[in-house]
Image (cartoon, rainbow, N blue to C red; front, side, top):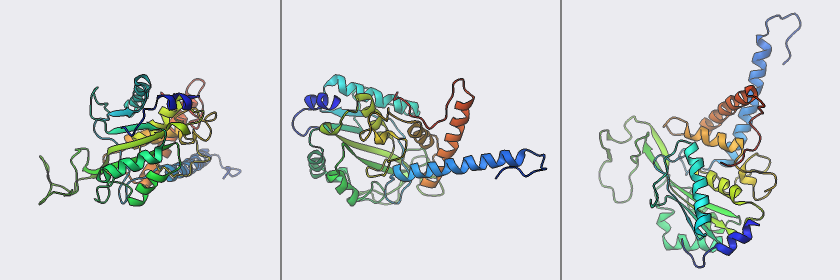
Length: 311
């Protein structure tokens, strides 16, 4: 069982309608099918987004814009590298760039045997690293308290930053700023240019004693989703086809599902403008519809709702 293996390798300490009769034109029936399919997909997408998405307060859904550098602490090197490599492959599938060896991690994954204590110690040591006090960068003090006290195998904290479109230049004032904020070659910020939200840092804590029968690939798929998207740690995902249910049903959830992968694709292929939940619902429904048609026309194809093995 993987939990025993991980527990044995965790380091000590706190390291880091039908067509009417007589009507000959088949179009209404075809259109009706399309409308029904579209409505069902949108409803399913809305349920998924409602359960999963957790943007910072008063901000849009954030995604990585620059390089992603993944660091894993408190595991033997070969296990750490396997987790890093797996998440990196999922990130590359979304068109992201991966940091070179030795880069400074902006996705920090810590394995421990006492996750609440680890989370509390990290927040106490540098609270401003989690909650700077500037609105719109994270989910706020109540969510930070839940990060420390949540009873779950994995907990995580995202910090994001509003930026000018795809420029990566921040669009808000930060402590210590004086005067207006200028973007090189652009002039003053917030002058009719689109604002988007980018992930800045993710801290994930894994409780090695709470992983049950999940294997390393399943765990790495789970970590990939929460590292690349702002997922609600307390979202109600029962009944949804998602890797987020892997610890409750490791035999029934193989890894990242088609819905998980569609969610990530819709997030990372959206325009640079801020992504709100309604935008994401429509984007996911369209992506699922395209995927379904592609699979149905492919040899041996199937619908998109089935689980997919991790990369």
